[in-house]
View 1 (spheres, helix red, strand yellow):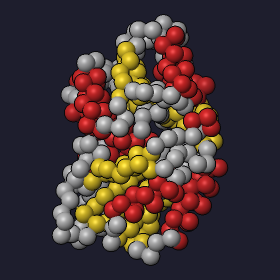
View 2 (cartoon, rainbow, N blue to C red):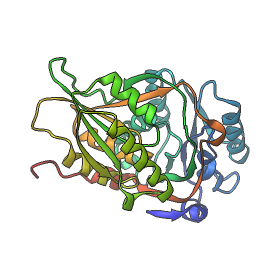
View 3 (cartoon, rainbow, N blue to C red):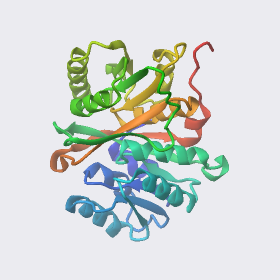
Length: 318
């Protein structure tokens, strides 16, 4: 469901509900929490980065001032195993019934870990839980600094055979250096490139930028096997497109790099959860362009967690 950001208060907070959110340096990370009347959020978790920046500290202080009862859980972003453990411990400690899970500012790696944890929660204990994503208006160029490490996401290691060729699937976003770093790390024999579908974009201006980056990246590699288009806002449409676009008849190591929106990243997670032999990778960067990373967009997306896990993308041959 797509709603105006200005309607978040009425849509999400007619009553007090548990909140799970990730706060960062982005102003977007505070929108959902701050849409709730002061003091009404008495149960919930705020994930934050250990050793966070001054700007990120300001965001945390802003939300904590409005909702002092929310518990802060620090994540060591350079330690993915620790991050996975902390997310699992935190989610296991609260009731997700009627909860709001704000996925706006989770790093893609963290978001995929969170998705894996949420799937493992008994459906009766996450009844009426909703995921919320606040769109971006404008985004900086560049968004981040140098890539420091490429790695598989905890819970999405897949099955990698040294004797098999690698087929790397890149869902192109807004960072060419990040995409190049992943391609150079995995050295795939086959490269499959995806770009955001214009009709399913969240923002037309960002869609045009995505097209330009996609064309530039595609022109740099001779091993591009195929291309496809995917939705920026519908996770199950992304999962279904991956079913159509990734060859499964050949024996190859399949690695997927989600570099677009958080909603499309959820789609990658759903596909990988249905294909446990597939690896999902993440490129860690040393720094972000904090001061101008993004602005708050006009739209927010609300997804039922029950419906998200109930649906299933059609497999090849269905």
